[in-house]
Length: 447
Image (cartoon, rainbow, N blue to C red; front, side):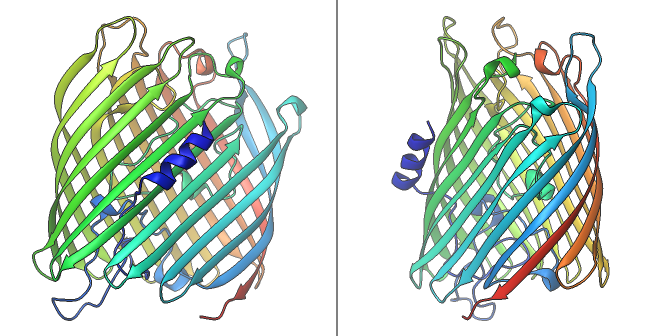
């Protein structure tokens, strides 16, 4: 299944980008800001890039970084039981990491890898090997044509056991690919998100782009996740963007998505066609506001039932701001999609927010929050998940102990409300406190 996803990304393209590789505070590629015939920005509704979580003073490029992170966490829910009470435990994790960021006049390459091990103090049967790999490549074919490729792979049995929790709730200006809806206490899980794309600025104020993406969610041991199922999605889009002035953009985008769920012996398929009209205002060089909306047509097929077809409105909004020592981003979207492990098609409402504040030279604080509501498109179907909602939030404080050493402490709260999902019946919610210490070295690369 993963091999098919890689092939799809090579054959189709996604994440349209601008013709430059430098990134501004809104997570967009940026050209010259003076003449009207300069290179255009790619507005957040069609760029697909995440807003940055660090202030401009913390932003770095052209480096090779490595290190080791040790973390310990206490969770009041690491496993469901038949007694009706969740099991709590303490875990210890080791994360060797390596990251490469290299920028040239035509190429921007970012490669990250964190692979480690987690051991549980009381329940050794839950011990796990974790892996996180990310690749982001942007290449400028000509002054006005850029291609890109991006892939993120994660293997873990605990979604919140990550070296970088902020990545779980990263905020994008476009409706984001969802791979996980219900978060089990512990369950082996493989997830992959890949995309690639091309954009072309064919006039002083006009740009077009084509895109494609795929996601994959796989549970190697279905017995660990009763009520949840493997899923995948593929899709493509095309857009036209017009610059009204230096700070104002409008445009239109067409999106196609195909979501597939894999219950035993069957395939449930949802297909959507959406036309978005979008508007972006760059209120300041480091502050942008985007709005988009339009009609969406969905086809939901659940054998042996007939296909259910419907029209509904789709909408999205986002705001991103990046100061020297502070950053903030938030987004909202509502559209028909799959449930990321749930069975059926859903009107999905999502809201995300991230913030980071460096309040002293060696101290910083972070916040990441998410809200997701799933309402079944075919509520009369007896073979679909009724739906539900998830609320999650993480707060953390980080202190730099020296040039290479830092310490971080934080708290995560997860609240889930779903009926008929056996894997979280006795343990739907989680409280998790964690502390980590990291040693990192950085080597600057020449331009």
